[in-house]
Amino acid sequence: MGHTYSGFTVKNRARFMDTVETARKAVALAWADIQDVRRRKRPSRLYARWFGKYSNERVKKVFDVINAINYAIGGGSITFERAQGSTDYAAAYRPPGGWGQQSVKQLIDSGRYKIEVGDPLANVSTNFFVKLHNRSQAGKHGDVQTFIHEMSHLFGGTDDVEFAGMPLYGWMPSNMLARLNPDNAVKHADCYGFYCAYQLDR
Figure 1 (cartoon, rainbow, N blue to C red):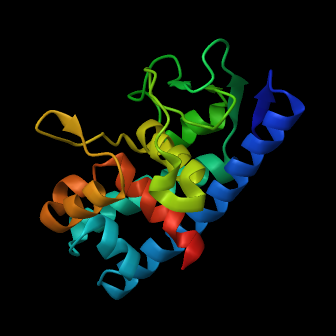
Figure 2: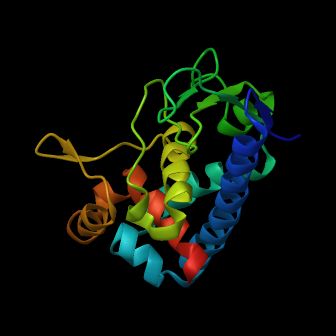
């Protein structure tokens, strides 16, 4: 079972497939890291940076999200379609019937995920359109960070945590959230994006 790519130019398909493959590697590294955190019962450097202090409940939440993304990228079947019109947006559509009737694995295995992707970058979200993140936020891995951020929405049910009505986008607000409110950090999509993307440079 593999992913399907539809409607892309040759150049943009190659670019997007490269993002997916790099994200797969990043998530696999994050999966190994969170497994090690669970085994040692203490946070790794990157876990602490993006999710804060250790607790069994929070570590379980992070593991569940990373595990779902890892399966979706590595073993699932997602249809990626080139978005028509605006090229800096994309959208991901949940399968018919929503999340309640099947497990995440069953839904992923069904192959009914459809994600529309703009030309410049893979930026996916659940049932709404979002602007691309500033690529400098995660350095050279900004595309991977954005991709995993949105995959965490789709497969992990994460949120864009807000402060004073504004989403906490970016590495500095996300890192501050981890230090000050780790319960919210483990719900925050950007924290997952950074946690995985930074695995590539450790």
